[in-house]
Image 1 (cartoon, helix red, strand yellow):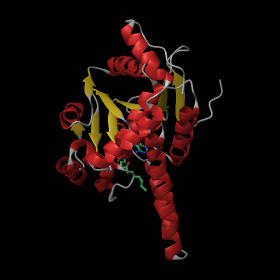
Image 2: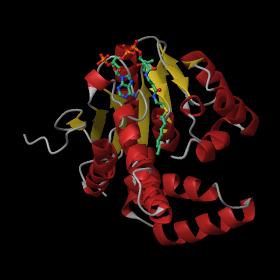
Image 3: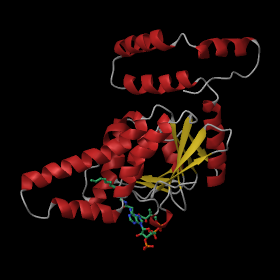
Image 4: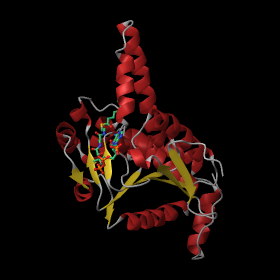
Length: 277
Ligand SMILES: CC/C=C\C=C\CC(=O)SCCNC(=O)CCNC(=O)[C@H](O)C(C)(C)COP(=O)(O)OP(=O)(O)OC[C@H]1O[C@@H](n2cnc3c(N)ncnc32)[C@H](O)[C@@H]1OP(=O)(O)O
């Protein structure tokens, strides 16, 4: 099989499964996010989104750690290019566009209609936190540790952590983590609500998350993608606006083959079978 990506690998759980693994695959750089990673992430997510065989995506990292943040060499090259002389306004505008496209690479996780579940082991630092906070659900193993590291590199985190983390762990916790850049454990991440569950080891994490993903993959794809879309959109809405939005959504998509199939399966005490999306 072709491997179209330099920094990522896509692996199907098995030939009859609709769970696909998107793996950060630069283990000798601890899956640091390079310029190639930022270019490849949206392409990979878009291809998974458009592939009808895919229902759920599990995001993980190859090797010792999930992700050591932005590749420090890429960071230096970005900052060198931005300060390499010429017109300051134009350099700044170029840097703004570069940051915008890196932000879009992370936001591609949210833009993917299918649920993306993060399975974190080892380090999840800086850009790694940007990435997992854009995921729909997060799990980790006991050896996992996290750090919103940017202030230590004299950076205001700019790829989504400052916007998404407060919505997950609350404003005060996000502020404390981002200002101190301190490491926190998987256990603390669970207490904060950043991860839903801590597994005893990386192999238990892989097994457990795959089982959860298979469970979601067995449900109505219309209901699953609709739930992701409505929850994400509701973040920016009042309860009243959110209710209005979901009423419109369901008026378009509630009456489906999936509804009939789910109701018959429930009544006949059998597993439902849904067609692909
Ligand atoms: C426009 C700006 C946009 C985005 C900005 C994002 C900001 C961030 O992401 S801030 C966070 C940046 N990352 C870091 O500061 C992490 C640095 N790394 C570490 O702290 C540690 O490596 C570790 C992740 C805690 C793991 O420690 P350990 O298991 O002991 O491994 P090491 O021996 O330290 O590292 C092995 C090997 O990997 C290289 N490496 C580690 N991190 C990076 C990285 N982020 N970029 C590039 N390379 C990295 C490290 O240098 C080692 O290389 P050798 O060649 O083997 O020495």
